[in-house]
Length: 302
Image (cartoon, rainbow, N blue to C red):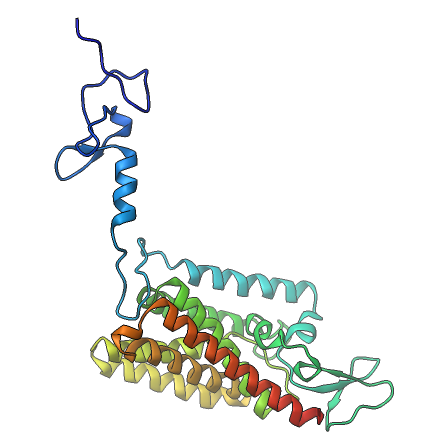
């Protein structure tokens, strides 16, 4: 009598079905339906490695799922940072975007004019606290402020609506880079124009996403009438909110986000590679760092 054949992965299963690629016997648990017959698990994995991943017009890998993972993570980080603010009120003073002020022993802040005095300490980016350029973008106005928690709510709603669209077009890595660069770009303009002002909020990054959405829509040839109305509303909000928010952060994020996305969208096809785009991002970071260094030298005389 002919010996019974068993699955190559599960010897206890008797089977008479073979993988159409490697010709090994496979049980129902190991079968993967193919255009012709069935494939085993290992052949399916090998095939997936040999298939070139789809990429968007902007060079990013198209996510296999539509879930905007990075947008969710950014929202969680912003909300978590706000919870920390509520528990520890000194968080804003320690990590908010602040260029240069003098702080006395009691915590009072004074304008910095290039000189320090006994008992006063220079605080801010000018004193080497460069992390504020980014950490300030994850903090928001405390609950006891005039705008309070609505500052966080409005920004998270905008992030939810814009982030899903932009992330889907750019891919996760490029989208995250755009968000962080826009946040830093907004902080840099705050440092240039109003180094004595404490600025917090994701608004700079949000305005960068708005500019990105505009550039993406133009590049894809979409009907721009609705997009133009949307951008007009965003720009109007930037003007109105200048009375109680940092217009410098908004404008800096808008310009940075637009510049980054324009480079991704309109660069020649041969330059829309991961290596080239990474090099462009590094160049932008170096330029922003140089601007901060020059501004610091001008403030401190160093």
